[in-house]
Amino acid sequence: MIFDKGNIVKVAVLASGRGSNFEALCNGDTGNGRISLLITDNEKAEVLRKASSAGVESIYMSPGRYRTKFGETEEMAWTRFLMDRGIELVCLAGLMRIIKGPMLEEYSGRIINIHPSLLPSFPGLHAQKQALDYGIRITGCTVHYVDAAVDTGPIILQKAVDVKDDDTVETLSCRILRQEYIAYSEAVKLICSGVLSGSGRNRFHKER
Ligand code: GRF
Image (tube, rainbow, N blue to C red; front, side, top):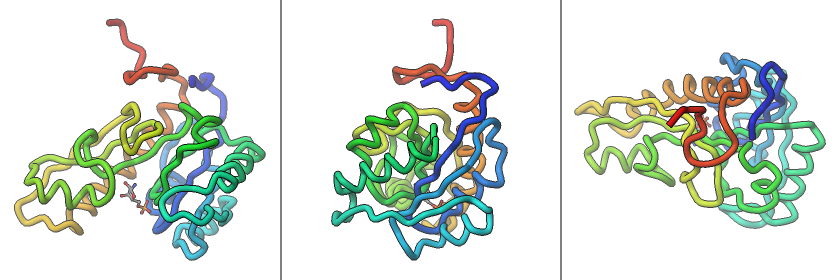
């Protein structure tokens, strides 16, 4: 999906918890991307308060009866809500659920995610602990398109973070988060500026 150069793009964030990436997106330079909507699957999520402070429309919507995925009816309802609001780009920011069904079809190539490692290393949960346990010396964060598997979609951009000898999961997570905030806004700006192409793993325009 290529967004037209110069057009404003309505962006929704889907999140389940703290919402520091949502907040960073609201305060960051997202170019033509406008953070216009927050949807959460957690009625008690801190991100709801952050949306209210930022003056961004927010809503809790039921995800259905499963723990790590959406019920089919519910995923359809979320998708319809996004479409009714004219959302063109969806940013996952700590959404603790896999998207597989109607949302992925409708928003194919227009859903992105941020992950706290340099993918394809350490996909899935507890990426920072995985990195420390492995003994890696450089980790970081990745913004990528979402596809039907977990953390495997085409990469948009990455930021590296050194691992220090005395790092704990908390100290490392904190340093990675600071890079996440920069990376996510940059990625939204890049996508909304219309410079990425629509398919394949490498979506930057390049002469090869
Ligand atoms: C971040 O580390 C992000 O990379 C991961 O979930 C965490 C969300 O944190 N996908 P927050 O809710 O944005 O503070």
